[in-house]
Length: 124
Image (cartoon, rainbow, N blue to C red):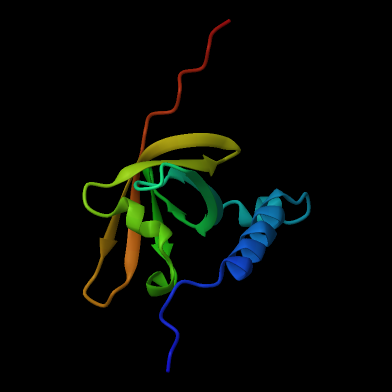
């Protein structure tokens, strides 16, 4: 019988910590930060803050996050329906936006993020 539930927390916790460390490393950080970011969001039901590393593709005013193995993950469900606020670490700066999850006919999940305009630079 094939496993359908979420991955064990000890496995995902270790993997996520490893990926965040890889992204922050002086040797590999620049290479992976163009494809890997950390998203931060507040859970709809729990009200708790969460951060998780994800792969992404960037467009002019948005970001696309393909969710690998969505049937085994829960976090993306916060962005179903009308979507939910999200924060991403892009180019060394936190960017906020609005994320909406879409599920296609084959069960693949993609999260589309419309980024908020970057904060204006202060002219001191």
